[in-house]
Image (cartoon, rainbow, N blue to C red; front, top):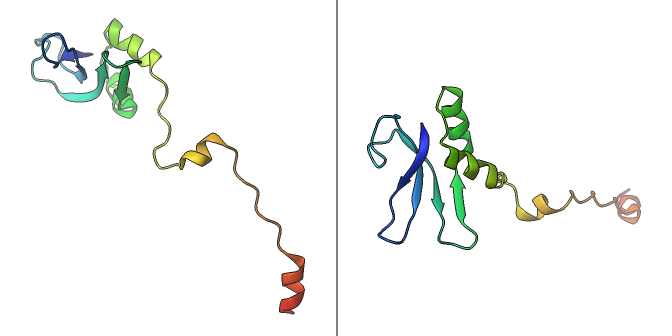
Amino acid sequence: MIRLARVGARKQPYYRIVVIEKDRARNGRSIEVVGTFNPRTTPATINLKRERIAYWRGVGAQLTPTVAKLLAKAPAAEPENTPVAARSESPAPEPAPDAAADTAAV
C-alpha cells in the first residue's frame, strides 16, 4: 500500500508518503519513503519520487484515495540536470559563421 504517515508535531501536520504493508500501523515500519507532503505551506508542498512510485505500482502496490489525489494534483517533475533557461525557452540557433573570418584565414 502507498499511503500517508503523519510525522509532524501536535497541530503541525507533516506527512511522509510511504510504501507499507496494508495491515501495519499508520506510522509502523515502512518499506520505503517515496515522498513528503506539507499542507501548512501556501500552496501545499508535495515532493515525490515518481520513478519509485511507478515501480511499486508496477509490482502491485495500491494507492489510498488521498495519495491518488496528491499524485494527480502535483505537477510533473522537470528534469533536474537541464538548465533553467533551456527548459523555459526553445534552443537558441547556432550563430552564422563570419564570412570575413573565413577569407582572412585563407
